[in-house]
Image (cartoon, rainbow, N blue to C red; front, top):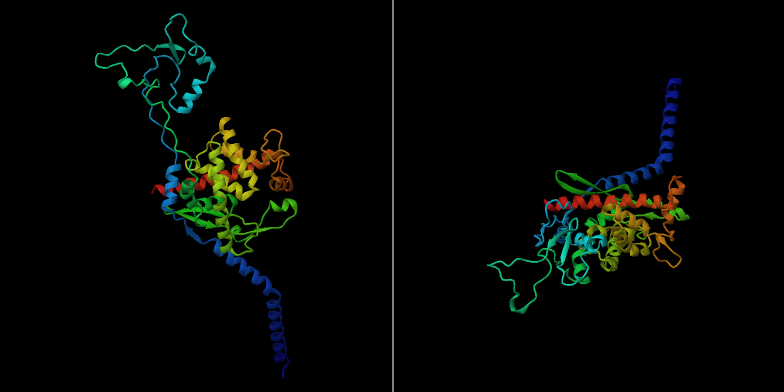
Length: 380
């Protein structure tokens, strides 16, 4: 046998050995890469966001209403008064409580003096009606004529009915791609919405299939979340189970959330954004904070905040509790330890309030974005 044949055989054997060794060394990482690729493929799968008729009803009820027509007052404003006549009930209420403008109007007439009503820049408008030949000034059937101008009387709101509210709002958490669950998932970073050719799709991000909760790391706990609502590892990695558990948990909390919102004067059907933020805060933190959120939101709105600013402020304020676990915005301690831990680890130059507020505003914007896209889809 020539030396060239012998060398070729040795070379061939060495190549086979090298290939076998490489296969042995990289077989395990290859499996992990395959699993990761599979999860990525699943994450890129788009699901159509089908809006049910029940969700359509909720969106129509909660959609911003057009401004009411200006009422025809029996006391028209004189030219040049320089102030607008309040057209909204709440504006009228505010105007009527100003002491500077009501001080004179509230005085009782002295010695037969004629009464006058202040309007605009306190100019007098006579309250004595002239008799019209074709109009009788006498009340009919002995009834007293209403003193309020037409168009300014409030229409009483129907009483709160928990059962009917549940029937109306439960469809928000009927499926993993129902509006309520998508809002929570988007706030968590587990969903993103994609609009293609006029169709709204819900896309599962890689976080949907498992990620370490950064908030739990603040107290040394390593927890892997799964599904739309970040389930704190309750599903054990079973995605179908994680979805079902998220839905059930959200629906079970709904009755308390509806009662809490109504208790502070917020109609959960007409203010769907407040309800979705209550549900998301319940998903994110301890239940006590979502219980205090409606009260904080009412305080924020009474203080002059509105829109997403009011909601983000209220969500942040709900974390400030005193030693009796009561909402205490001024002297309470910030209980958002998970978020505060994240800011500390990342060395953010922010206060405790700014740390929590930044996260809450991000979540509020995500929920508002979801709600806007669903409403546009519902109008088509």
